[in-house]
Image (cartoon, rainbow, N blue to C red):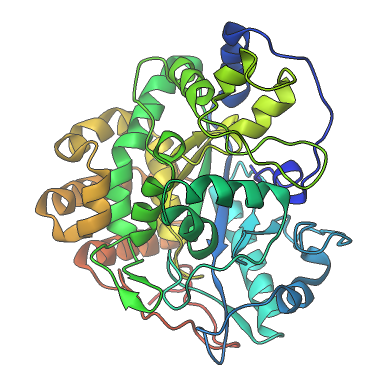
Length: 431
């Protein structure tokens, strides 16, 4: 379930497979690659954090310090000669354009094993950073610093150029936001539409429930999740929620082909794409050479929708959580999607708030309808926790944490990261 870290991070143009000269063939390719069917068994997570100097979280981060801290775990985008070793329990470390760190876990068939392995890798990453006076942030947006790029590679140069034509949200998304992503199997073909609909129906509710990014650049905002607002405003064709239909694969494939290119890999340092040219236009001859399936794979990697199919379903709408508080949203999502009964009921309990993505980002649980739907979703999720392999004591701790979220306790933790050496609060520890 680890994210693409070779082409997208290192800037390697890779091989050039079959040329694409027909839209129908391209749509069929997207549908087959992005939706791989089978019994839902595996789960993974990708966790991002902004990175700060412990003594002054508002001080700009520099690439050299971050490179030294990550050592052999640094990605090639940050340190071209790095060995890019995984952490002890298999997570790969990557770095976002503004210096945010991310760990991407391997897929696990056991939720208990995923939580244990990820917690150990988070602790290891925390120690690596602390040894160089760095700490991880605890919010979905950097509350201290304006956006500033650390990574200078063609992909991010092209993205910044394209997003600047739209507005200021693009550079903020690239450099100042951090998210918690949950990766789930697509599932069997007959149940795909239900799972796709359930994940989108849950979006506004879970954004509201786990929103914690009300500050940006040293100032408060009018938003519970400024990260969500920034993401949705970055480039609507590639960042707004997808259409919920009975044919998710077909509608996704059409959307991918109708989305403008944000970068085109080519020899040399400039990957800027012609404004407004979609992938379908490229197939039709808008660029000098025909695109390949490899180009299409890369284009898919530039789609930043709240739910993104990558062969599995990548749920991207959650704010980053403090190092010890990420377990509850992961368990809630996995529990709900692991129960056919719960999947079938999600649309029913969320029906009053379907499509209210911006309201959820702005109001959070202060909106009575969203708060009511969140209670119903938590009740539904807690009712199917027994279907996971979590031990009973951890199920109880997760249920307690979710109830605290509903009550607003801890929903907006203090902005300042904990100093090095401060152990993170862990859901596996009883309170």
